[in-house]
Image (cartoon, rainbow over all chains, first blue to last red; front, side):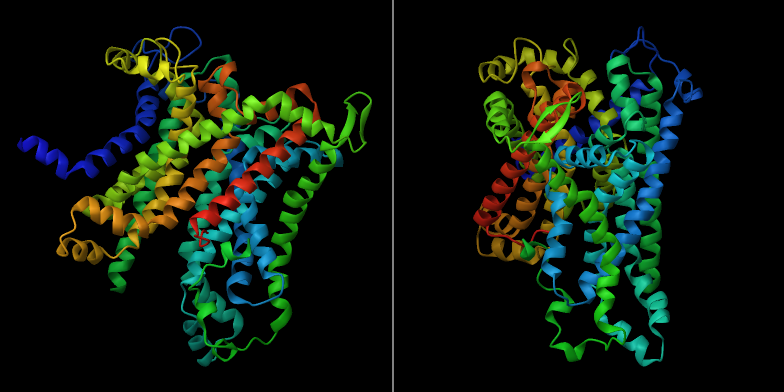
Length: 266
Length: 311
């Protein structure tokens, strides 16, 4: 009976942890299978323990090439979307102007549209323009769909900012540029960082829009997609595991830094 | 739609008149200069393509002879009559995945917001971190998890759960892979973080003292949840369901990797028509129908749920 009562009292916790398990189960499988030595082309069944793939992550043709291409595209897309997005976010929060509602809708729509619709329509544009599909068309597409997410992230931060801080800076004879660089930008930085990080993750992981607009260029998600048909090398699991670990590490570090800063200010 | 993004409570909105804002010397044109590059990008690479797609959808012809605008609206009708099962399936699968995401995501969001204590950040990281690893690799991992002779499927068979799902038409015989259940499982998994994060954000804003007050007034925990927590978390529920349903209904990755030819969703059809069959008018018409359907569903849903404070 005591057990039953305990279960009833902690029902939410148990259900929540089960969901967490559901979320992380594939990551566990990916990690375990990165140490597999598969028979045949497909790495879906456990055979033997081996660290071969970890010792030679680039041992599969084109894998690391596609990985570095994806990293490059994600880096450029992040820079592009962040610069454009920060400008839009500031304009939307700080100024009243006509067409503000229309601009807000234009920002919102790409987030409210299934990716396949955007992907297909962008492809019709490129086909009509006679553009050569490849690096540039992918980059253009990625900046396009990351932009709205950056605007939303930065807007949230700038909105919660006290405008009196900037007024105070100006009362103390700071010029507009100085005010922006010394007051506005540092306060908005966490929002900008969040937006940029989101843009990087979205761009790096995007498959649907890239699949339509990449032509014969192969990004990392496209390599994984192709390998699902031809046979998945273990190295894909190695990279999946490494990415997960890097992401966790990265977030943990940023949290530690954030905590320390908060403590210092408190 | 403008009210959606103009969230109330912004400092600029509540400022008491123009006098409170700092005077701008280069004033009136500055916002337009700030907007110009980004908006131009969206107009050229988001809005203009939709126009091109609209024109493509009323063209006829073939790839060899070239396409011509002939205002052939029949393509829409043909697309609908040919592919209504896939449309229906998309709504069904995406809808089921959304409901499952809500049922699975709510306890976890609640756990992070109220019960995790000092573990809160760790759990949050574990929810967000998969975002940064390739979702394709993780979706492929489901092939291993749901494998025909795998432990999970064997367990489900022993418990006779698969008999029930087969009866419901969700599975077929003793396997899960290549059935609707596998596709819905993949969709639920892939879009779960999109449900959890908005839920968590709106739950976190709730003042914990409201729960205490409700308890002091002799409400049982479930009553507190039904009368206090759930209503206050509605904005999160609404944006979470939208963020799950919209991308899920256009997805073709899960149906392709985990399903079979019998589980093709509308995204699969659009992808095949565009990239393999090269029947651009039909593909364009299909994606326009999807877009229109989603806009209608989303608008009705937002109306009905009464929350416009979404983004």
